[in-house]
Amino acid sequence: MADAICRVLRDGALEGEHATSLTINDSVDSPFGPIVFDYIFTQLSSFISSGKSQSRGIVLVAFSRSPSFTVELLKSRGIDIATTHEWLRILDCYTDPLGWKERLKERGAIKTPSTEASLIVNLCKDVRNLDGLFSLIIALGKGLVGEGKSRFSVAIDSVSEMLRHTSLSSVASLLSNARSHAQISSVFWLHHFDLHDMKTNAAFEYMSSMVANVKPLATATNVLRENSENLSLLEQNYKRGQFHASLKRRNGRVRIMCEEFSIGQSLVKFTSMSARKNETAQSLVPKVQFNLQLSDKERSDRAKVVLPFEHQETEKSVQIYDGRKSETEGKYDSSTEKLQKQEDSRRGEIIYFRDSDDEMPDSDEDPDDDLDI
Image 1 (cartoon, rainbow, N blue to C red):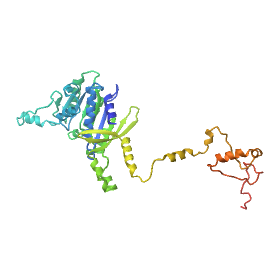
Image 2: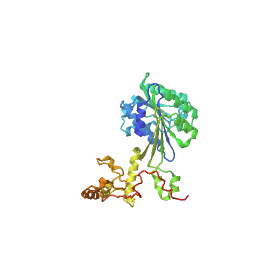
Image 3: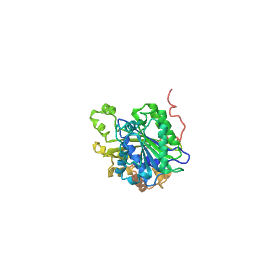
Image 4: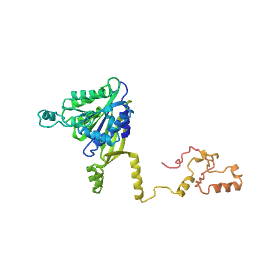
């Protein structure tokens, strides 16, 4: 499912449509949003660097982590750093978000900081000015792909950090302008769901064509309520979790998908919920005190059972017995009767004797006429 989201971001938007957008929600119960963001960012970067994406470049707006972290992340994923200047730009909003270091540098209080990978990094000195921030994003993107119909993607590593410095309406306006820009193919961002109110969370989801929620396997309240011995489930929340995603299609329908993920050495691995359920079911089978499977003899006996109206699927004629013997039936050989008895020896039989031979089989006579009511 996470790979399906990456493919949607890779394919981008059609001509005249808004850019594809994704919100990644996490919380303190399952704080793996940054790892999921890194997974999607590196997957999309791999598509772009190999020329398999609608986007020809990507602009990363770094609020929560330094540009050097991104460079090391790409190296660890096997992406060639030597070619990043052709398709990657990092807008550094982490090093000096409010311009304080720049002022101290002008006064000689600090030395000029060394910037790694300066060819791909541009410094933003005032994150409160979102109009200027949007202009920088567009300028960096056009510097990668040029003017015209070529497109680029935008990744924002934390809109929660943006809300620390400015209002919700300003952030929403920036995201809306990014989605409606003709040269932006896709945009995605990380959002810490539990830090904001319902209005803020609903605003980000409304602007998204895809919403991914990182959830824990079990919450502390449910575990303590059910059984105190299941506290090990809470420990699994530090290594595993659930990934729920909803994709809005062009026809208005919403596709909902669920996966489980596990974390190991800063890498995330996704597995389908159905495969996980099968493993759980198989692990529970030995604990059951009764057999859930049929033996060979039980299967054979079940196959011999004659179901009602099964004769209709054979070539035998349908015979209905009304309780009386006709004259022709009395002339049958005894051998025929023996054969019938042998065939029906293993079958049940209902014998019905009529009260009177004068009574028609389908008589309308009321059987309760002799009652004094």
